[in-house]
Image (cartoon, rainbow, N blue to C red; front, side, top):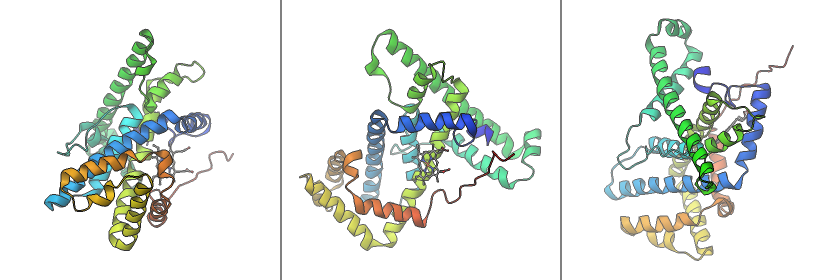
Length: 299
Ligand code: HEM
């Protein structure tokens, strides 16, 4: 997995893993990152809501799995390194980084069941040739982003404007890496950020896909989820969701936007039935069903 995960949190052990784990858990509990990721996920969820409401209006079928993958990729890239990839735009565009990312993910995983992958790599043929090209696309993209975040941080220091500092994870790690005790070169930063994208993207997209599937199979449960959302909204003295069901598409989107404004880290905690349906979905369809533990410390 080295070509993809490098020395990131998933692919390392001992001190390297420990350092990343410690920094990551500290960063993820910071209010700045939490608030930023709430706003980012909420914004992209609204974009998705508009695509879904358009489809309901025109009766055109949509592929929810693909849409959720686009939603989570756009969201995690924004939180991870401050880039708006835009694969969830209404035209559902292709993006070279997104294509390369998926390609590398599939090919490195297939290595586990392909006894000839090393030979293919040696001869630079087939999947391994394709992997090499895609890995280059990913690296060029990420290193470009790292350089631009670095210069933004330097500029904001030069102009003493700390408000301009981006709240994304990469910017936070660049700043931390400037402390000689932390020692982070470009490759380390690349590995850290890429591992977070891998960790958060497919897991979240797969869980949301199963959740929608569960709601489709169990309309009575979907109705109870909807009831909870309506009550939640009423408790905050807004009635947009209740009135939006029969509305035209534009008013539906407007009420969706109003509703979304109510959602943040704190208010979401009161949606216990929704939480229960999501955790039950995870129990039935776990996004990471198997964690292989190899004891590297045995002598
Ligand atoms: C439905 C969503 C998710 C599921 C089911 C899930 C599940 C898991 C599981 C089972 C592990 C392995 C834990 C272990 O080895 O003990 C893991 C590790 C990890 N997850 Fe998630 N995850 C999800 C979402 C996310 C998100 C959104 C992020 C952050 C962007 C994230 C970041 C990580 C990281 C960094 C690790 C590695 C921790 C370490 O090795 O120390 N995950 N996840």
